[in-house]
Image (tube, rainbow, N blue to C red; front, side, top):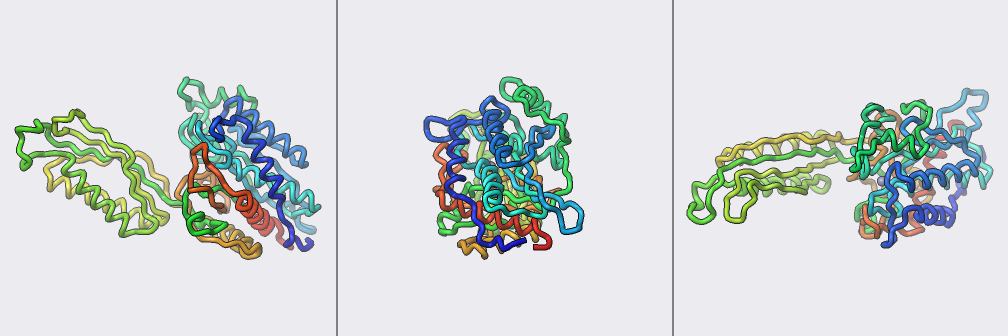
Length: 419
Ligand SMILES: [Zn+2]
C-alpha cells in the first residue's frame, strides 16, 4: 500500500451529485419529497445504481430493497479475502424533506469510491456503499425498517405488511418499483460500518466546528402519562378541594424540567402532545394524557431518569388526589459506538486537521441498528441553523467535502490491515 495520506475526495463532484439527486422529487421551496418506495424513490435508486455501475461496482439488492454497491479489494498478501468496509445511509426523504438528510451519507460513500478510482488506489478489504430502505418512516412506520430487518430488529413479514395511508403494503410497493431483491436481508461479515450525516441540530454551527466525532446515540424512552381527577364546574367549585389533573401536571413538569437540568447538558425532556378530556373551557378536566419523551446518551443515567420520573408522577398524584398511569410506548436503548471505529474517525480528523467536537446523536439513524451487528460509528457535519426535516435544510459545500474526506480516511484505516 502506497502513501494515501494526500488523497482527497472531489468536493465539487460530490456537490453536483447531491444537486442532481435533489432534482428527483424537488419541491417548490427547494427541498425534496422522495418518500420510500414511490416512483420517485425508484428514480433516485436507479440513478444511484447507474452511478455505482459506472464506477465499476457490483450491485446487490436484498429482499428489503437495501442496495449494496461493492468496489472489490485486493485481499491480504497471501491471505484470505477480507470482509468489506461499509458506509451508507438513506435516499428516502420526509414529505417536506431536504436535499442532504441521508442522501449526503450515500453520495459521500459513492464519492469515496470515485476518488479511489481516480487515484488508482486499491484497498485490501472491499469498500461498500449501502442504501437502507425507508429510514424516515414517513410513508411506512416504523422508521429505519430496512436496516432494522437487516440487523434482526424486525421480521421480514412484519416489514412487508406495513401499510401506508392508502393501505398499500410495503411488500407490494417494493415489488412494484422493482427493488425486491434476492439477497437475504441479514448480516454478513463486515469489518466496519461508517455513516456520515448532517447534524440536524445546531451545536457544530454554533461552536464553529467542522466535524462531529460521534461516540454514540442517545437512548430514548417514550411514555403516555395519564392523570385522572374529577370534573367540576369552573365557577361554583372553590379552588381548594378540586381534583384537577392540571394541578398535578404543572408540579410534575416543574420537577421533570429540573431533573433534565440536573443531568445537563445531555438529558432531554420533551412533552410534545397533550390530550384533555372532556376538553371544555369551563370544566375542570377529568383526564389528561401527556406524551413524554426522555433521552440521555448514557443508559444508566437514562434508567435513573426513568426511575425518578415514575417516583415524581406517583408522589405528585398522591399529594393532589389524582389517579395516574404511565404507559411505556417505546424504548430505544442508548448506543455506544465501537471504540476502534470512533478512533478511526478521530485519527482521520486529526490527520486532515479539521476542527471537531466529540458528541452523541440526538436523532435515530440506520447506524443504531447496524451497530448491533457490525462495529460502527458516525461522522456529523454542520447544517444551517440546525434545520432538518425541512425544505430549507442546507449545508456548506466545504463542510460536506470535509465530512466525506473524514469518511474516506476512516474507511481506509479499516480497509488496510498491512498498510
Ligand atoms: Zn437521515
